[in-house]
Picture 1 (cartoon, rainbow, N blue to C red):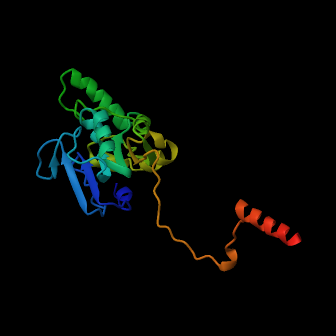
Picture 2 (spheres, helix red, strand yellow):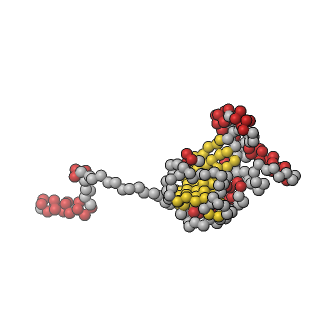
Picture 3 (cartoon, helix red, strand yellow):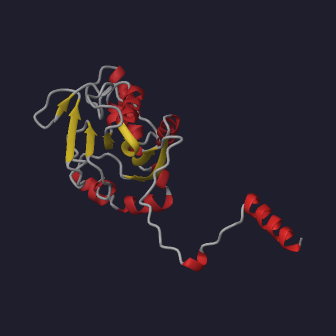
Length: 232
């Protein structure tokens, strides 16, 4: 996340949810906010993610760290993100891959939760959204996926000893089965049809010899008429 937001410029950036991740710490935009769905000492804004308190086309960057899979109504949240982003603004989405070891654990514990278990790996109402499905949602809203990647190939052990002994899975997974990473991240750009960004117009002075004029039909007719008068 630090590498992705470090080179993005603008004025207004917003993080939606997941206060444990400081997603904007490497970004240099002057105005940054952390929006949460409930009041919190770390939050800049407490709001419903389906109705953000920002004007239309007013934000340059929005990051969603596991926001769409944890909070209810991900479709409405993503539509609201599209509304408040400026044209060519960016959204960065982090999520868990259902086709992974972590995804398998979430599905298993969701089954046990229906039987009365309370030891849940993630909130019971969470919905894992795969990367391809997320790309389809972004495309329907007019976004263009700019880049993406996978990571976190180790299983979800709580023991640090077990985790350290499986570090080889990170290198092997990135090489041999990259699409099975438990976490993925996507960067998408909001495209607006019919809009064209123009840069500065720098014009070099032309040499006199490079200026060519094409005689118009009137001037050509006048020249032929004067030539006929001379012949007469």
